[in-house]
Image 1 (tube, rainbow, N blue to C red):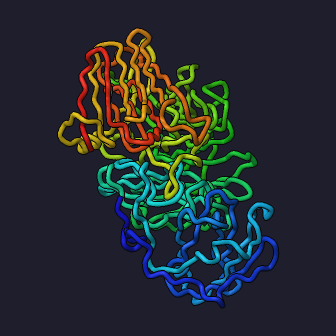
Image 2 (image 1 turned 180 degrees about the horizontal axis):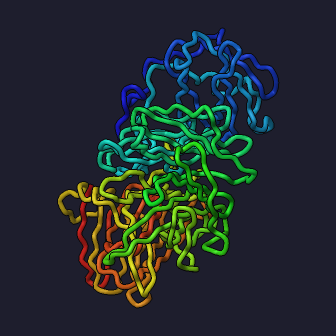
Image 3 (image 1 turned 90 degrees about the horizontal axis):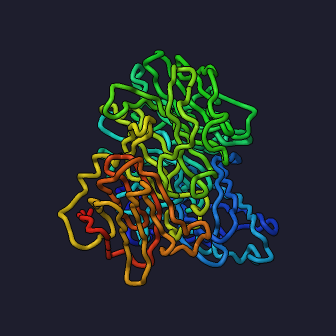
Length: 561
């Protein structure tokens, strides 16, 4: 994943560093409070992070006015990694840092002795060299820092835009900002500068973008997470590279505590904009003619699906039913907790939508992906050829902050095209790996690669085992009689979380003839080639899996990426 020179430079070492002079040492004002006058000599102040510590709050003050506030786990006695704070952006020669620590002094010691005071350095460049053995090769990841939900995805003028929940100041959840990446093929992503940052209304939670063709602009909707959750908008005149926030924000408010994740789209059937919003354990639907003034139309959720957690990250799309002339609407609803195997998951509902009210056709709960690491699934606006291309956050809130990486945390799933198919008189969601993934296939190989695709042609019940010399393994099993597929990762590296060891099981809605299995450094995604089953799971083998064994004379074709 490449970085633009205007953002950061790929290096293998920290260069052009200047440390703090004696005059710049912090002034300790109490047991947990210090101020630090910083002379701005370089672009970045490199903040040393120690993940086991509690957050410290840093208020950046210029000429008596606060210009930024961030939370970072400043190092007390060990540096895990550094994160950059851009101090040149404010155009000042000096800045005052007002720093408050929240850790327990009984365990951390005297603040004046903290390692961070000696390790804070200035530099014009920041080291983004990848040192993580579990960083995926072909999945989208942040160059550094924490990432969760994909946000605001759209396609315009040959470019896919992916925004995401990002913490630029550490690899655990905090400081929510819209990070930004672009791609021309859904595979190779280029990091861009942060798109939307916190303001007086709050940090920036999940949302969506629409391509407003009439006005040749891109409009973003997002949740401002302050004392309450409200909905805000911002407009881009340069294809999503920069946004100007609407002066009339917020555009939607509520007395509800969980009120978030706006998904907007143009509905040609009513010649209006629709917006669907997650509110507690229901979805609310709105209409608008101008994207600013929204009219509440209806709610959906009571009596349908799983309600074991908060409903989040909705989407509402119209799809063709495979092999028929019928079309149906699908409402996507992400839920946490409440997934079929604990924690986070994506459920969906099939039905009708008249632009104002969604009516569901079924009473049973249906899951889009039966793995444990598939969440916050949403689709690209304005995707080419009418495609409904989805990405999911490839993690689970039960252990997302504890997975064994540090420079970065979290990746997104491979892109998937969504559709509908019929089985025994019912309509279900189909999930197929996007066609762009075929371009990654190299020449076939006999050895299991760290990153690649394994195609398995089945002849009935089959067991597929990936393993290494340490005895670690992942076992997948297709049961032709029960019409199920399972993935057992209990013998992968699991000690970082009691919630991680699991065997996940999915219905296959009939026979499976071929499996497509995507392997990367920390994940396995398995699909029925016909799209009737999807399963996404993280794995963290101590050594890469390099052996594959199959039963029942199944044919295996291996494509290294």
